Each structure stands twice: as C-alpha cells, then as structure tokens.
Image (tube, rainbow, N blue to C red):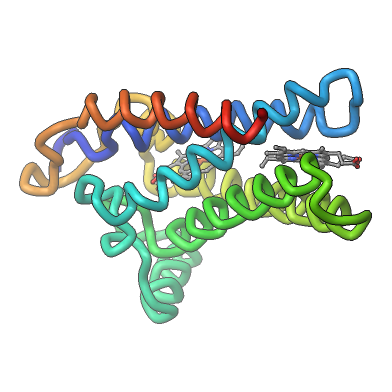
Length: 201
Ligand code: HEM
Ligand code: HEM
C-alpha cells in the first residue's frame, strides 16, 4: 500500500465548511445579538449537506454512498475487528463511520430546515423545540463521530484528520481517484453563497 488520493476537493472543503458552520451555529444559538451570524452559519451547514447528498451519487469513487453505506453485517464485522484491536482497513470510509456520516448529513439538513422554518415563523413554539432537539441530536452524533475518528486514527496508525486535509490515505494504487475535481469545488462554493443568501433573506 502507498499514499493515494482518496478525498476530492468538494469532500474536503465541504467537510471543513460544515465543521465551521456547525461550531459557529452552536456558539451563537442562544444570543439575540448574534442571530444573523447564527442564521448564516446554520445556512452553510444545510447548504453543504444538501450538496454532499447529491455528490454522494455523482461524485468520485470514495465519495459515493454506494461505496461506503453497508449493511448491518459489514458494520458488525468492522466493529468486531475494532474490538479485537485488529481493525480491517478501508481505503474510503469504514462501514461504521459511513452510518455516522449519513446521520450527520441528514441531521444537517433537518436541523437547518427547522431553523429556517423557525426564522420565517412558519410554526409555533413546537418548531423551536424541534429545532433545538435536532441540533442537540446532531451534537451527540458529532461527538460519536469524533470518538470514531480519533480511535480509528490510533488503531489504524493513520492520521485520518490529516487525510481529510490533504485528501491522501494509504491504499492500493488502483483505488486512487484520478482527479480532485476542483471545478466541482468551485460549484460547491457558488452554490453555498446562492443557497445561504436565499435562506437568510
Ligand atoms: C463539527 C461538526 C462535524 C460534522 C458535521 C462532520 C461531518 C462529517 C462528514 C459528513 C464526513 C464525511 C465526509 C465526506 O465523505 O464528505 C466526515 C468525515 C470526517 N470527519 Fe467530520 N464532521 C465534524 C467534525 C469533525 C472534526 C472536528 C474533525 C477532526 C478533528 C473531523 C474529522 C473527520 C475525518 C477525519 C473524517 C474522515 C473519516 C474517515 O476517514 O472515514 N470531523 N465528517
Ligand atoms: C445545523 C445548524 C444549526 C444548529 C446547530 C442550530 C442550533 C440552534 C439551537 C441549539 C438553538 C436554540 C437556542 C436556545 O437555547 O434558545 C437555535 C435557535 C434558533 N435557530 Fe438555529 N441552528 C442551526 C441552523 C439554523 C438555521 C439554518 C436557521 C435559520 C435559517 C436557524 C435559526 C434559528 C432561530 C431563529 C433560533 C431562535 C429560536 C427561538 O426563538 O428560540 N438555525 N438554533
């Protein structure tokens, strides 16, 4: 195995935008003064998550849901190998992490949509409660995600955080993606600005 290109630009830029958006949305959620910043950062989360759902169908090899969303048997087999401290290597996302990713994207869209509906006063107090509850559920999955990333990095002996920055992981040369798709990343940024502007206006 050698270092190969696994994560394209839309996956990497989208990931760190979602991280920034989520953290800022959390920190500003209770303040009236920072309401606009909350709405903007939350809109970044929903916009990127929506883009990522499409990229999961048309994107590069390891970004596709079909490559990392696996059935319960594969998830259990992976978790079993973790418990034996001999984790099976997956060049893309591992089967357990794959489900956390699906949950994070779904919760990003649902939390953002409920926030948008609250902002536009489309519901009553229950909608605010729903928004807050979804945000808390997302935080819980983020914490599980972080535990998975750090334990996975230790057990695999591979810095997965650095891989999410550089795009490069250990793998067979034949598994590499041929392009980091910079134009798709520009499309993501254009979409982010358009969607956020629309969601906040
Ligand atoms: C705060 C909110 C966060 C959200 C919503 C989030 C969401 C996601 C998503 C959706 C993916 C899948 C990437 C893709 O295929 O497009 C992912 C992967 C990943 N995230 Fe996060 N993430 C968060 C925080 C973090 C933080 C703080 C770190 C690092 C310190 C991190 C490190 C990673 C890594 C290393 C992967 C790749 C895991 C693998 O190798 O399979 N994430 N995250
Ligand atoms: C995924 C990102 C988001 C997270 C994590 C998040 C989190 C939260 C949380 C925890 C609260 C409750 C604060 C409290 O204790 O009162 C809140 C309130 C609020 N959020 Fe978000 N939010 C997000 C996205 C959005 C978006 C996209 C919008 C609008 C476009 C929005 C609009 C609002 C508004 C208007 C409130 C105040 C509701 C009230 O009056 O109590 N949020 N958000």
